[in-house]
Image (cartoon, rainbow, N blue to C red; front, side, top):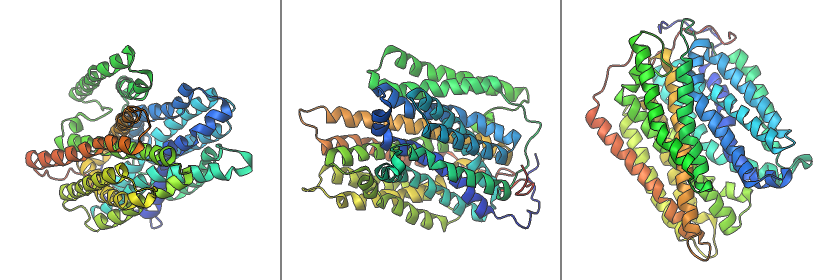
Length: 492
């Protein structure tokens, strides 16, 4: 596929297209966190067991993580605009099924379909943004994406708490899913008109065997991480984790064999041999293992530990997205320059913010006030805002335009693996400490658990240092920054 520039249609507006793409992505981002707030209501309303309640989240995460890379590649072949809109449509339909579910079997099955819809649309978002903007505007677009990613982590509890508290027409928890319907319908109708159709690679073949092997490897990591702690780490959880590495090796060998034969790989072997891409994916996985876990235990700390309502708990975390917006604005002013330095600055600010949050939450004032954690949350948010845009650019800057879907899909697949692992580790640290003594000591538990976040951001700073030392700047890959031919906003 040629990556040469052609004149975009006069009515084409990349910023309007970006807003529509991020609206679709935002539905996915808030989905897990908004559901967590509603789980007690769902359990009471549908008479669910503890295992069934856990699978409301697990079914979504498994389907989503396993589908990201395959659907990223499908976008490269079938058209990223088409896959994005189909994904939004499937996600919206599944949201309606979730909202209308009459039993737990229907709800869990609908959540798995929701995960597949999310996996269809999410890789296309970064892939389209990556190739739609010229280099001088790309940094601001990624900064905007960073704001949406970060706000998704905290908007879910706030919106979910508000909807459940309002109990609209006596629907209890159901509006948390039904609220996606008008948003999804709007994104589809507006996207048909305003999202550009990028030229696709019609001759690309799909590696079906590699797709199955990759999905199995992801499931072998994510499933035991989700289930292991609750079930007391039975033998099959340990066996799956041990088998994930050989399964990953089979996937890599499969892709190498395809490359030798000159055939299209599900994840291009050139990316797996690219230390810049690999180190970037590692930092994405680490970074996104820290934030979701922090918000999970923070919600329990505020609601169960100090009796805040879901709405009040969401409001208490509001300084974080405010800090994200400020950090994203600052980093967006630097364009594509000094990416490792800006990423390191963001990680350092996050390290300082997490250390402060750990101290403040572990030593709360009496009586407790959420203002005690407002400043450290704002600092953490600012670090997140500073780090996200350069992190995404570091990962994708060496990915050729025709492989943007695969590169983006792999990055976000491992982002989900990181989130699942982080949540499992942090929640285990939290609950082990919480139940260690005779009385539940929530400040001591969160102080114990947040040591994971400190370790994560120290590790990211070390990876960045090694990356700068070992990896010399490479010439820009042809087509990595320039948009491929566009067929026009109204095309499919």
